[in-house]
Amino acid sequence: MATLLLRLSAPMQAWGTQSHFSHRDTGREPSKSGVIGLLCAALGRPRDEPVSDLAALTMGVRVDQEGILRRDFHTAGMDGYYKVSGGVQRKNVITSERFYLVDAKFLVGLEGDPALLSRLQAALQQPVWFLFLGRKACIPSERVWLPDGVQQSDLLTALSTYPWLGSGQPPDQLRVVLEDQNGTLVRSDSPVSFESRRFLPRTTRIDYISTPLPAEEV
Image (cartoon, rainbow, N blue to C red):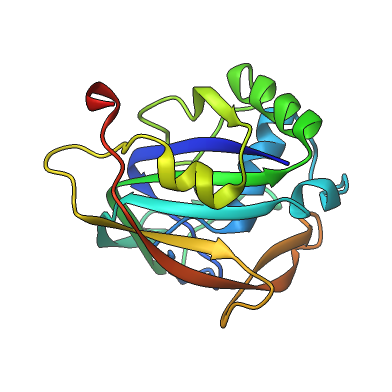
């Protein structure tokens, strides 16, 4: 087994798993469906193609900077808004509230077949489509791929030893969310199909690890 590491860093990120049009939530760390969607964009894989090979990867997230939760109140339709079917709707103002994580940084690990992980690493370096961190407004501030992103180690070892990605004074510990069949936290974010938006639940657990030294101190 090997582990592919991704750096997810941006002024804003949004990882909603229970969003409706008028209320767009975000989790406190990347969702599996969001990360797999990012990988599909890198590969140029359309919504109607299977994602079972990517969903089979075991995912873990190390929270290097927790980020701050922010709420944005949206209105559409003051002078009309465009309908999907064409034309302009000139009444019924639409309001929505959207939540984002501000200034968060994550190290995401995906454990699985080394050949698939190498192909994903290459795709992230030359993505077919633009990469976003949850929503199209959330553009990465640093490259997602890491030069040494494919690690020949298991998921927890890779997340526990890779240099800290945050800024400022490192905390003593970092929160790690690990996919675990025996975990007690259930998240409904394992994609079956993006075309029909079908997701399965998966179980996770939360660990705390000592913060690795930053790269310049290794």
